[in-house]
Image (cartoon, rainbow, N blue to C red; front, side, top):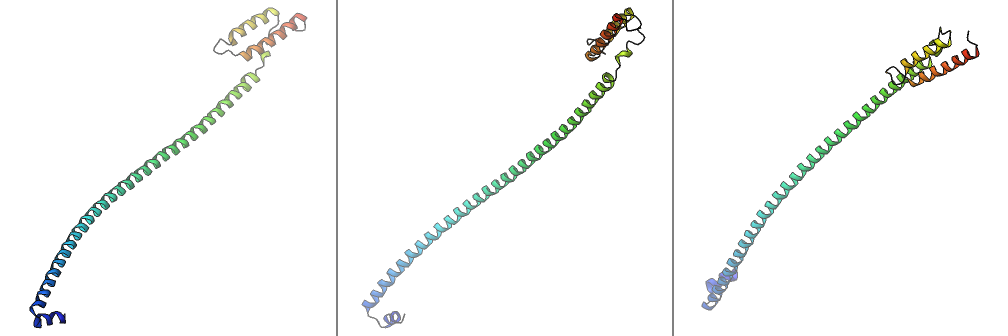
Length: 177
């Protein structure tokens, strides 16, 4: 600075022209540098705006993806709950069906034991004193218990047939009095 001020105060015309030329060149360099800086600043502002827009777009995309993921998770949870409830209902239905089958089997077993196991077929032929009355009673029982009838049963028919054959044999041999 001292050299600069000294040249201005005490310098010759040539030195002043050189200083003027140097100051002019410096002024042009500073203006050019200033324009470059302004252009760079504008470029940076454009890039900043573009970056901000990209960030906003990415944030919207991330937000929408998070929302979609949340909805997918909610949908999956609902499906899983429906499946679990369905399996629980199926298990309850299976247990209820098993109980009903057990009850039905028990009823069948009870019917088999009570009606067929305890049936004394000889009671059907009680009071039969002759082969003719035996044959008539047999025909009547066959009409009643024939499997084609509503109250018919094949097992009872077989038991009636056995008893009939046994009593018929007794009448033929003369053992039945």
